[in-house]
Length: 211
Picture 1 (cartoon, helix red, strand yellow):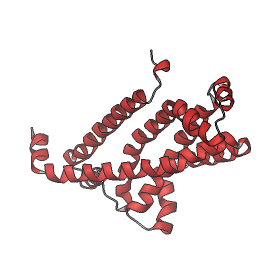
Picture 2: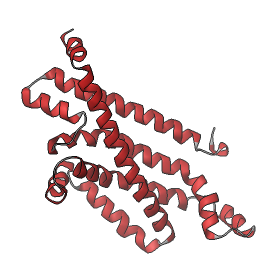
Picture 3: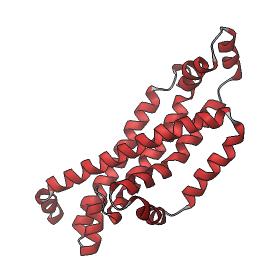
């Protein structure tokens, strides 16, 4: 009952933090997609770059997120910039890997048929390969988006906004209600992002692949 009272009294502040969290998450994923999808396309065409690019992405994944924030703060300062950069870096691997995998697993006969009707390499990529690989690419984006919701909560440790601010403040003041007021919306937001991404993934899946 006391928790409900706390939520009622601080509802506006929680809503504002939730909106800030959504903004940071959306911005991070958008940048990750803009960087990751072209990199995935590149390594699918240039085989020699596959191991170095994926290797670098894997190495970054092995670095603890707090440590990465610590490395970025002297370069980018405190606030949203290092937080967004950290989330983008952690989001790249699933997007790059799924993009390259989706493009690599297309039936070679489909590509040959496209060549046979006179399509250029660019037309084959944009009209054949990417539409067929889109479900796999979306699966990578979905993983990154859900993971990003949790990673953005760490932004509070370097003075950025979001639900992490409530969690961090609650930990400092030993206020269980404040911790829950940040953790519960973050959990619901992650579930919502996963659900919306699953709908998009199903929508872009070609009819021939659906059961």
